[in-house]
Length: 451
Image 1: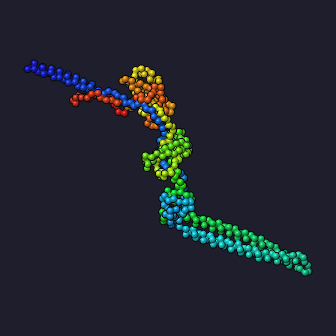
Image 2 (image 1 turned 180 degrees about the vertical axis):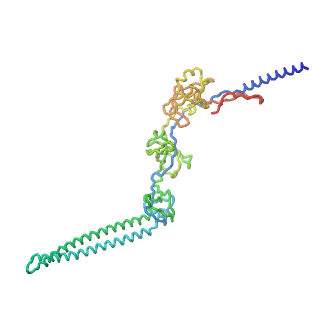
Image 3 (image 1 turned 90 degrees about the vertical axis):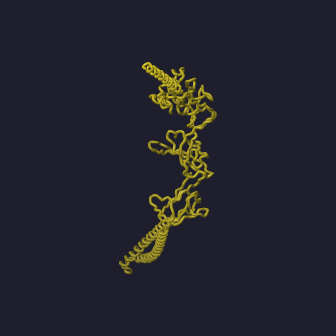
């Protein structure tokens, strides 16, 4: 009985060893192998651009306001004899709206009456001076005769003095009459100025278009009261020419140095996503805007809108064209960013790599890749490295980095040629089926391949 029990125990031990060995074999058979993801170096054309967003604006906009206060009584008619509204085409001098003018008409009537009164005052002053001149003439003749007779028995001294006093008084009265005329004429001028002001205010009750254009905004309704204060209330917004539009683009301060007048620009709008519009930089405004410590400049882009498709205030996705290259070697930007671990580099390149290649502190999988890592230098004329497979390892190829369109970059290098497979990254692939015992503790093996 004991012999049978010992044989059973021995058999169980052997079976256990066999099971463990099989499990280990299956586990090793399922271990992961690293494969590199590559892409060929291609030859093609490259357009380097700066991307930004902006707003489509009319080339020249006139804000029509009101200089007087009052209630809007009616709107005018456009050239098609339709009531003024959004999109109405108007000519210079077209009546846009009529403000209640009853108070201003009364002011004109009052100023007119004051002017008539002032003119009557002038006539009266002129009549008075004629009488004064006649009295002066009589006084002067009497005074002349008195001077001939002198103070004698024929002319008493008192009469002599009376003639002289009458002459001097008549002379002074003429001067007063002339001053009264001047005063009356000044009153006429004042009354005329008041009348002109009243008439001008009355004319302001009729709102007219100062330019030829299209109404893009009507900001009042009939019956609404406008109040003119220090700032004239805005009634209509008129675009002079919708055939010529602008795009106001906010450009980051880091990119503004690459923008200059006359630079070619292309853009799209959501209303026509498949159509690309063309334009050019008109000017760069110098008044910068700062939002949350981000400095931007407004760039005016001029574009033709003869088709009439571009509407005011559409959002534009703008591309400023920096440079264009034809028939150049191109690699994806990811190929310039990726760097291997030291043990992935071919042996003959490990010793020279730290001194011969730029540094890049980040590995694709997010881990620090020691002092042998490399980086792509962004910008025209910078130095970079791409990696190609050499057996089970990779080796570096130095390149000069050119312009980029955000997806691919122009590169040059002595060893670089079209069709060369550049490494973008790595992926781990199982070489067998991995089987584990659910009753045994699981161990973490390998490294994460998440990017």
